[in-house]
Length: 164
Image (cartoon, rainbow, N blue to C red; front, side):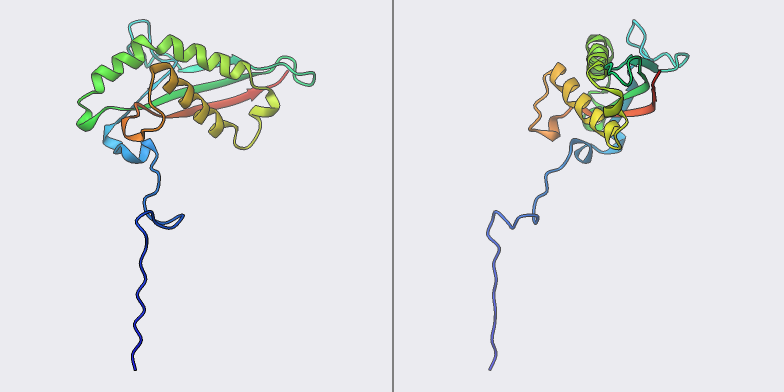
């Protein structure tokens, strides 16, 4: 006597199985990703490698840390488009048109964070995710469609917190 057991999986799948939600970085191949340092871009929108790329941010004062600051170097990783066909257009868009808005958003973001908040183990990751969402909002990206994302991630090349 033989017993056959057949099972099926419904088209929606089981939780945790099937299609996983991909991040924008996973959708865009590394060869189609470009980056620039937020504070190395000059007034013409060109990257000036003579500049350090570091910026000093005042952070939220507290009773225990009234005069603290953060020195950070912020890089924006963005999508150059399929086979980098949109690279120059997006470079101009990000580095010329929106650069001041990005810098202002970074200043406002860090000004709202305290020394203790920035000392947390996940503070750098959270700041990168928050700034990515803020920058994406500035340029009017659709957060629901990772395949059409322009700003892929924010990377901190330097992160030094100082209290006085």
